[in-house]
View 1 (cartoon, one colour):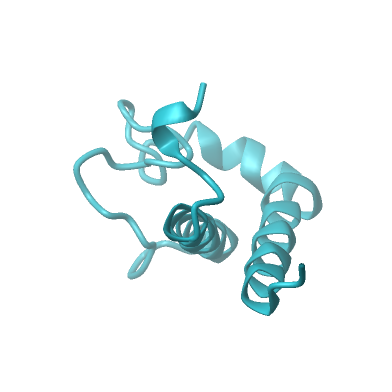
View 2: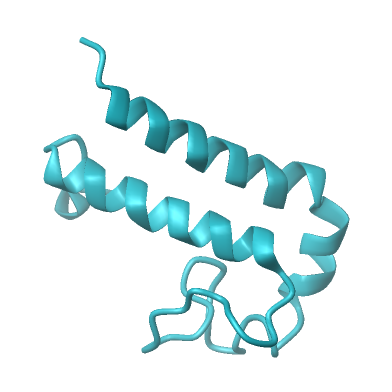
Amino acid sequence: MENEELKERLQEFISCFELVFDIDWDYTKNSIVDEYLIDIHGTFLDPFPGEHYTGGKGDNWANRSSFLAAYRELKAFAISEGLYNPDEAP
């Protein structure tokens, strides 16, 4: 079964993942501890709890913004297509 939309979303996510966690790894390591980029109570996937963070003005970590957008899009798509159930996740 080939699903072109799934293929495109996976391509985008994997490309963004590799940018943040491989190609730009030195920048990522330094940025993870920066409270301006990730709140002290935040996580990488939810950098500013209570806000739907998409990057923007003042955020020069564009690869993270792209990664978070691709992650959220892929997750929403997987849920809508019945490929992922967050209630069954570990």
